[in-house]
Every structure is written in C-alpha cells, then in structure tokens.
View (cartoon, rainbow, N blue to C red):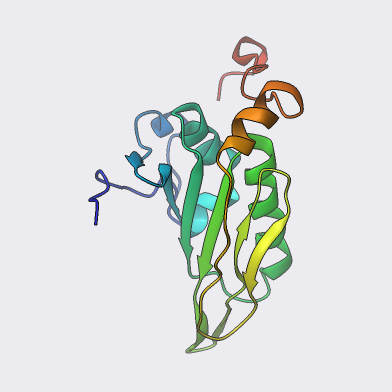
Amino acid sequence: MEKLKGFTGKYIYGTSRDPTSLQGNTSKSSTKFGKIGLGICYDLEFPESARALALKGAQIIFYSSAQPEPMGNHVDAYIKSRAGENCLYVCHSNRTGREGKMTFFGQSQIVSPWCEVLARKNSGTGLAIAQIDLSLIKRLSKKKLPYLRQLMPSTYAKM
C-alpha cells in the first residue's frame, strides 16, 4: 500500500477561511493506479478545490463524506460537475445510517469525465466498483473538454 502525502481538508463546514489559502493546500499523489487527489465532505461543494487538484495533475479525486439528508440531489450535481469541469474521475464515498437527528444517505459513486455514473451504491454498506480508462482523460482534454487549457485567470476578479 502506498502512503499518500499529507492531507488537509480545504473547507470545514461552518467556518470561514481566506479563499486564497487554497493554494498549496491540496494533496495529490502518484500511485500505480494514476495521479490521485483527495478531498473531504465539504470540499466537494467548492469547485476551486477540485480545480486546484486537476491543475496539479490529478486524474482521480477521492472524496470521503458524511453528507446528511436532504443533500442527495446537491451531492449528485457536485460530483458530476467536478468530474466534467475538470476532465477527471470522481470517486465519492458517503456515510450511511443515523446519528442523533441526522440521517446519512450513502449514495457512494464513481463518475467519469463525461459525467456518467459508472458505479453507484445507493444506500447501506457496500462498494461501488468500476473499471476506469485514464487514457480517456487525455483524449477528452485535447478536443472535447479542453477547460483546463482554456482557463483565463486574468479575467477573474480577485477573490
């Protein structure tokens, strides 16, 4: 098993951070399976954290979450958006069960750069398993989804 470099979540629910602190606060490691990026729960809801990982070369981003109901539709949209807008795979694992008044809905899934759900475990414990093709990223990013190459940071307002 390969040890991933130190990881710190970028966003912590209910706190405010300086958005410019994202730079350098992303974790990406090269493994025999590809270049892996890591995110946690609330990171998924901010496109900048996934973009920072993609710009560092991540091909797959893994998110571990404890998203409660009623966030299911939001999480679905976020996962597909992060995969499509960054031309990479997103693997999302979400907690299931109850704790106090909160219910965690599961919905773990693997999504392709085409925003296709390749595997999904709707509820309960279990695994979402899919075969992925990392060469798809290179093919798509050259012609169909060139978003990272066409960024124009100079046009963005300072955050």
